[in-house]
Structure formats: C-alpha cells, structure tokens
Image (tube, rainbow, N blue to C red; front, side, top):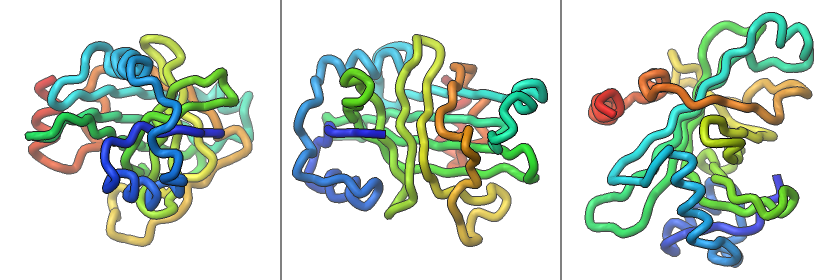
Length: 207
C-alpha cells in the first residue's frame, strides 16, 4: 500500500496520525486535491457529508468461494466508515470500524481507528482513505470500486475478540489470500453490531 499524501487539518491531528500509522508528518498536506477528496467522500457516503454520516459495507464468503481460495482465512468482513464534523469545527474527522470472522476460528473480531485521505501512486494516484489503529496497530486502505462497492487492502491490523475487548489484542490471522477484499454497500443496520456507544448506535439506526 504505497501512500504518499494526507489531508490533515491540524498539527495535532498530524501527530495523532503518526501514532496511528507511522506516517511522516512532513508530507502531511502535500498532493491531495481537495475537490477530488470531496468527490471521493460523495461516492463513499452515497451523498454529501453532513454533521455525522456513515457508510456500511459487508462481504460474506460462501463455501464455494472459500474452497477455491484455501489460503484465505477470513470468512466474513464488515466495514463501517464514519465522517463527522464536530461542533464548532469546520473540518471533517474520519474513522473506521472493522469486523472479521475466520473460517476455522470461532468468534467475531473487531478493530477500529482514524482515517485520512491518502494518494496511492501505485494505482494511478487513486484517492483512498488510509486508516490506522492506535500506535502501530497496522491498518487498512479503503478505495471505491464503484458507487456500491469498496476495496479494502490490508497487510497487518490489530484486532480483539468482541466478547473480550479488554483482553490482549493481537494481529489478525491473515492468510496469503487475505490482502484485498471487495465489500458491498448495505443498510447501515448491518453494521450496528460494530458500534458500542449507545448514543451512536441509536443515531446509526435512525439513518
């Protein structure tokens, strides 16, 4: 995942992202076209970003697909992306929540973190969301395949058991075919299980 530029509104956010994704803050505001970033947001969220806007994408792999991809360990993935304009601020904050299930391991495993716009030079200067888990926990890149599907790319990401979130987290168990995933847009309620805050859950269900 070759990423070269970020759209970061404040120095504080830049420092936070260094912790999240290990990115050089010296390149924090170079190369991202704001108009293209706004167009990306419109595709991601199927419309303009308001005070708090969500996008939910899901993929469940059937037995036939998994039989054809024996080196794939992930059997299901859910992605919730949030864009929020905090009160009295003019900048948009982005975050993600990811849920995965494995074909040979019981339970549901989650991850979450913050995102910023990045440019992928190795994909024709494609704009994506580059998302990181707190302090060297890895992360994901999210691009739009079309208006109703997103592409999730990952190399390493820290996850935790949803039923035991306070226990030690660890890197996701990924196989050789667990690098790129297509996930499809679904109703926001499909991602409700990824939300732990009651107020946010209520807001999500009202969308």
